[in-house]
Each structure stands twice: as C-alpha cells, then as structure tokens.
Image (tube, rainbow, N blue to C red; front, side):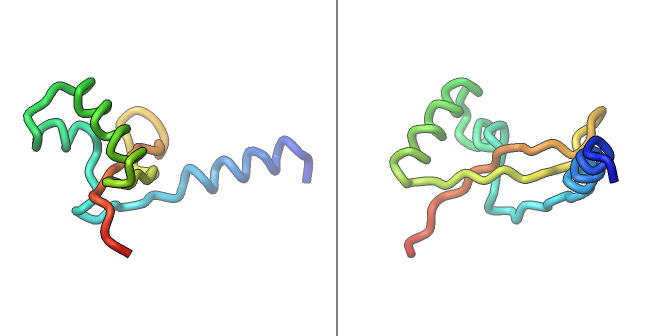
Length: 81
C-alpha cells in the first residue's frame, strides 16, 4: 500500500469514529446558556477552571453539519479522585 493511500485510510477511519458525550459533558455554548454569560466570558472561565483543576476538558468527535466528524471540546466538573 502506498503511503498516501495509507494516510487516506487512517484519516477515513478517524472521521468514522463518532463519540457521544454523557450528559455531564457540555460544550462552552451549553455552559454559556446555563450560566447566562457571553461566549467570551464563558470560554475564559472554562480555561481558568481547567487550569485550576476545578473542571476537566475532553474533545469528543461528533457529527457536525457540513463537515465530517469534528472534534469539539466539552467540559465537566472534575470529580474527586
């Protein structure tokens, strides 16, 4: 198999993998609606919360309209270990 064919096959496999986040994981837009803030404020707070260890971030590959499955960051409150 040629190198370019292998690369295309790898990318195709990655794009086929859809992940469904559990309800505790929310996008920044969902947090924005829940908190009643602007998107820029919400993103800033989420970044600080992740940095401080209050929240965790994970990219989920979800189906997006108009493009293949795209990684979208989701956030949730960090649970105690």
